Structure formats: structure tokens, C-alpha cells
Image (tube, rainbow, N blue to C red; front, side, top):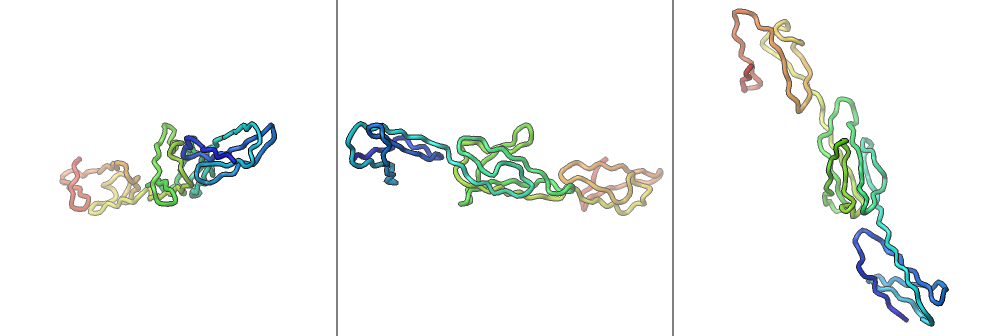
Length: 183
């Protein structure tokens, strides 16, 4: 019998070892410890080892578009869209089963990209959303003193600009809570 040691196994790949003896295919037993056994050697042996990148399942919510499998060594690209028109993406997390976070970048097209070298197991994409818009209510003035009315809509995370229609002879102090705003 002959034992063959598989050299330089790379994480992220599965290996297949086949052999022929005297031109005939023979069984190669994987010992599970990086060695393989061919029994009853009676002639010249030709051994072929191939490595194939592992593919892993991707679990994702309905507002994530991307393949259902990710392959080691190939960038995994996905997109995220809000589930409703009045919602915005708050956070995107990619985690392995053990809770380890998988890093990603966002390319110029707004797509999320996980580098192929970081694909080391099945992972889950989790998205949280927040309301995109909020209501701004003005008090202490009449509707005719503010352009757009006493109740307006503002986009969360963006600057909100409003215009007072000041009546001559009055001084105006504008506050958000206890914070005084300047014109």
C-alpha cells in the first residue's frame, strides 16, 4: 500500500484525488487527515488532484437581490432596496453562522461587494430599515406665517429648510426644543 500526502491544501477549496495504475482507475481512500491511500500497488501510478472552490449558501431577506450561493475566491455582489417607499436602509450586516461579521464595501453603483477571499462559509445578510420621512409641526404661529403650512414632511438625515413669512413689527424666535435656530 502507498500513502500520499496532499500538499498545500488551501482553505476555501475542496480536493478530489484520483489515480490510475497501469492505465486502469483505482480507488483512492481519503484518510481524512491530509493523506490518501492506494492499496495493492502493482504498477506505475498516475495521481491527479484537483481543487474546486467551495460554494456556500446565502440567507437573505426579500429586499436583497443577489445569488443564493457564494463561491470562495469570487466576489459576491448584492443590492439592497428599501421594502417600502417611505423607508430607508439603516444598517446592513453580513455574518457567518458563528456570528463573525463578514466585511464588505459599496461600489460606485451602490452595490455591496464581499471580496472572494472573505467567503469562508455560509452567511446571512441582515438589513434594518428606518423611516425615511418624519413630520415637522410648527406651533406658536399662524399657518399664514409659514410657507408650506404648519405641518410639513422632512427626510430623516437630511437638512430641512423652511421659510417664515414674517409680519412687520414682530420679532421672531425659532426653537427646536430648547435650541434656538438662527436664520
